[in-house]
Length: 362
Image (cartoon, rainbow, N blue to C red; front, side):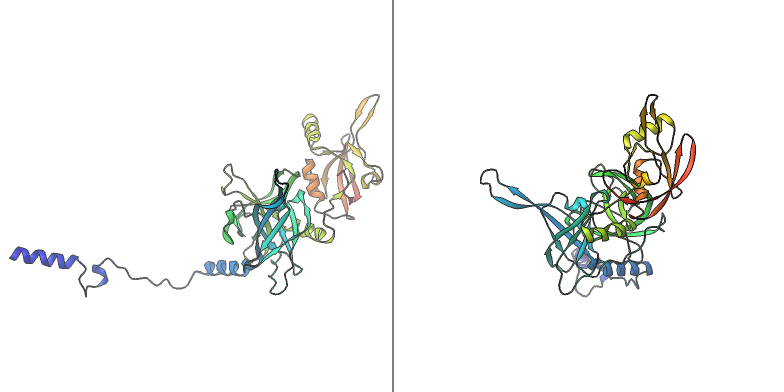
């Protein structure tokens, strides 16, 4: 009987009998955490203030049935964008809407609008849309500047990666003035590199500083797998501020031009062969700003090919490649006067040129 009584007592103890305290049942009490840290509060506030300015963009394409000849719309892709101004303009990447026949913009509150295409600048990977927002217009993203960015400062990205709406990631600026090849034209220059997680679908979303100001537009990732590998790129906001107003006015961006003919591949071969560091002027357009300033291109005569001018710097900044020259000129606008450093037959001179509108030359 003593053994039976002992077994009963053990069973009672381990069976969770009524009246036992939490420590004997494996239950735990919740520990009060106290206030959030100051940086956590700041990050939460930044997201809550910025979220409403970010949009989700889904694109569609018109397809014709081979049998019935009926034309219907099919989903093409998705991306991100943000409210630019109170007129309903939405900024995104060119590659987000490239090849699409239509686009739908969804606001953070769930409202959806069919977007009209205002203009594009493929060389900057930028596009401008417009939606007819009436009441309760979303707040435009506050604008910052990218001229004073520092490697190591915190950045924040909002977008819709993989269709997961309004995702918030943080990181730092990893590098500045990066260059990426573009499928639609010259290399994209002066990009911001960040380790904030950027995945497919983030394209076109804003990159913000710790004050919630726009400092860039997330445009690409570098990853063999197509997923974030800690290397993302953004178009700097100073480029956006220069390009978007032109798109809003005329639907296209006019690049400032010298009126010279250049070629990236030819220039690379000439640089390698001669050891020169600059852009070889192959030809000068008649009546162009370069012609008015006295620049000369290559000439062919009885003695063979005579080298023309070599542009080595714009406003004191070196331009060792054609891409660097185009990027540097892009910092100015049509009508600005710039000073070129030019070499010819080992003689250096300074030439002032008033920039014209881009045609087929640079």
